[in-house]
Length: 394
Ligand code: SF4
Image (cartoon, rainbow, N blue to C red; front, side, top):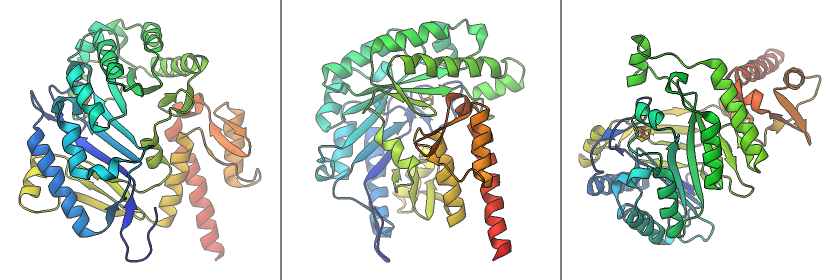
């Protein structure tokens, strides 16, 4: 994982962005380009050109065997059956031979057909992340989703028929109450799918989206904080009671089905991101590509790097980031001395029901995860004062 001076870091975790969506969802501010179909030849050609530049630059070098490959979007399933075979050829088949490789591809129900599922499974995909969001017809329409309420079950069956049983579904909470969506009904229907993994996302309103504009113009209401809180806590209760482990603020898994790829982000491992808007990290450098697909593609066609920006993450910032990322997960952080500043903060979180102490570690509860951003700032302030104190004493 780490590299000796002058050597490129061997990267075992790769993210590949597929930018195409058939329609933009009302809340979406991802790096997406709207097309009826994905442009597979242009996608593969651009990724290949980027990979050659990455290899020539020498900061990252792909490991001989990847342990995690994640194809996200966008809607990767819009690229059709041949997409994953093309990607495998690009990355090198030998790199995808590790028997423990977790190869996830995101899919939307309307474009995840039997032929896509079969071809992806043959290429080596062994985990599907399915954008389900809700079973409520009016909610799907409001979001601009293209699948109906029966879409997720049909797509799940296609995955299972192709031999891919490791399926995660995305579920959204905090939808406007005026839609009349029943959260209990959605939770029950997700449990009935009997999938090993569920990702839970709260609706957020980003300024540049159709929803952001509608809220500014008074046509839609902002997210109701109390409903947001109740739905998150209820989902945590329902999934935990059903045997899922709430192993990260937004993720629930049957024991052993935790997503490996996200773990790489949370534990500070290096990862390479390919595609428009994709981020890469190799301590101490974080860099990200230009967001726009056409800009990304044009740069590569001209032989230029698609890198948009990069930053050097200093040692203090990296330590704080690690603490923040650890607070997101069930692992939590090593419990500091009770008399230290951070120890006192931990005690106060525990007394408020926001954290528990467990085997020498401080872990946030579901209540704590609801206010993760505030707690992370408190932690950040405490760590900064400790560092400042040290520097003053030095
Ligand atoms: S399908 Fe996903 S990536 Fe595409 S527009 Fe909707 S939310 Fe965004």
